[in-house]
Length: 305
Image 1 (spheres, helix red, strand yellow):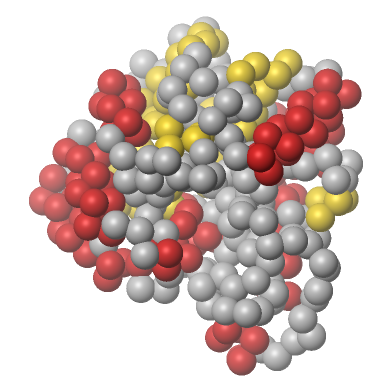
Image 2 (cartoon, helix red, strand yellow; image 1 turned 45 degrees about the vertical axis):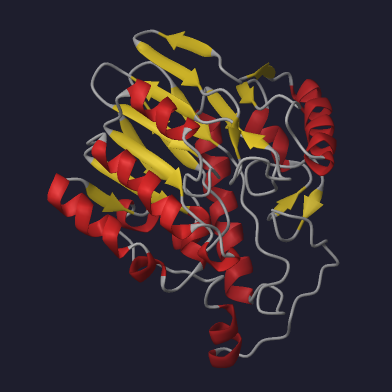
């Protein structure tokens, strides 16, 4: 199994896009990218806009090769929309290049809030136009040659009862590596993502970490991340909400200590790519101070990502 990070906060954008290739199938997880319309009262800096365009170009390149594309849920950084968006770096036509002719494993509209159900409806119509094979993923399982792909039951996007609803995670096994992809579980804060990972016996875990800037229960998140470490994957990739905080390493320091004792590498998308971390959103105030630029106001809304 080969895998590579595509876009994520350590690479300068909001995303968890990740590419996995086995002997049998090529999967593009959550082919989306977006930028926070406002952070610290500021719109995205031009460097963020430039990075979003670069990530979008990489998504399009990898989508050409992909057999399967996932949509774990309908926040704007996890799918490619059918409408133009500066902050999602798309012209309203790029979704065709991402999804045309693909098998799309997508979250069902159950357990979603109103805004996500609306996006699900729009994306479903767009997928029909592309000839994609759209399948509701929740709890499903698929076999491609010797590669098995399983989707989790719906998992909470953050704490149980979250108004943002639920997501689906995925596990890919090719007989050698076993990779678990847990987007936007925000910790995890609940036990279900851990149970799904435990059943998969992962060698690699990619997990959306806790949003420390929102004041979630960090102690609980670290405890649950420790349970993922105890599954003894060779690599634990911390991602997404956690890396919107410049002090994220200090805030989860006990996890690094445990992982070192257990022989588990704690990685980021940036480190997997052999690149330095560029937390552009977390540095937005600094970027405007050091590199003054005219703010690009697009009128794009303040909905949740």
